[in-house]
Image (cartoon, rainbow, N blue to C red; front, side, top):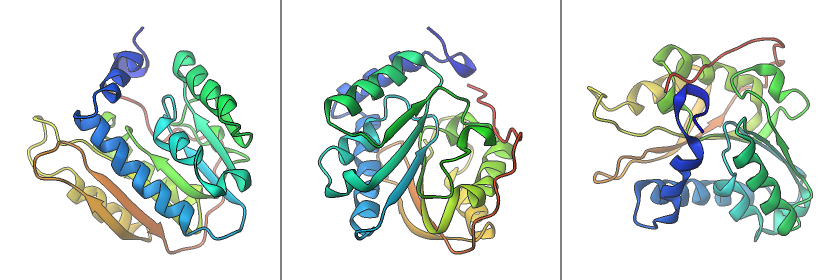
Length: 217
């Protein structure tokens, strides 16, 4: 069943089952960044939000084996009910009681109310489906989603339609929004890019009722 933007997101997820696929490589890169963020969290409570989270495996597979799970609160935002149910089933089967799966539009600020500012924000599988204007707007809204010192993990594929390296502008936008780059994983022979940025400022109040992105694909 096609989802937002006309894509069948359940079918899209099947590439995860092939360990040699770019999507599987991307998942492992994201998971490495998630694990580093959890490792650095110390013993304090930790809050995570994930936009357009799919079945949540990029986060939940890490959390299921991490010592921080018991003190971590998670909100996954996913509109596709089939993928949301997969995430719920995984969280239940692995005793992840702090995981909340919300079937809500991640492109609206209201979907984040009560879950931000977060220590870790995942924007994975998002930017490649947006206009440049909406990517820039989303980077700006990340200032409302992150706590001081919070981390954003984001992805962007390199597609045939891209005339230049698509991450160049994204990195500039994060810099201008008050983030510092922690890392960029952009293998030469793979289509994925995984960026990690840390917020250097103070979190802004979440502006209710705002739409800041819409999927175009």
